[in-house]
Length: 106
Image 1: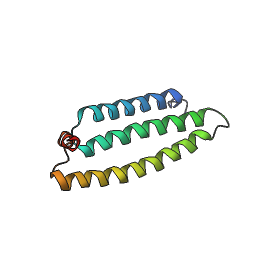
Image 2 (image 1 turned 90 degrees about the vertical axis):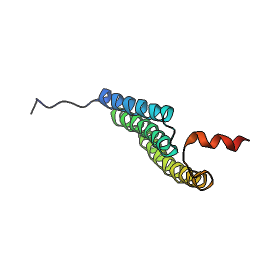
Image 3 (image 1 turned 180 degrees about the vertical axis):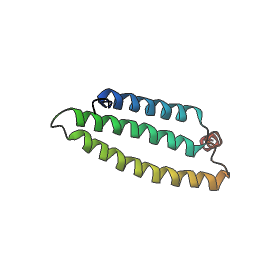
Image 4 (image 1 turned 135 degrees about the vertical axis):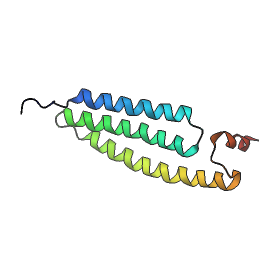
């Protein structure tokens, strides 16, 4: 039984950094509005994973789990509002390309 790998705080932080990097890459490179929203969700999940990991490895600290719950509620509200905006843009422009919305400024 001693051959099992012990999962520590470093493993969670590395996973969170990978999730954050993939989310940032997705937001920076995608032109599709839905893909951009998926990148934002990855970034929020990386932050939630950090909060939960630190609250697990710091004894007596529950605030990380409360912040993670707040992030999940915030992500759900953000997804609902953002998808409503994307549907409105699709009805107007017949496309969800983020570059097409630049005509809204005019």
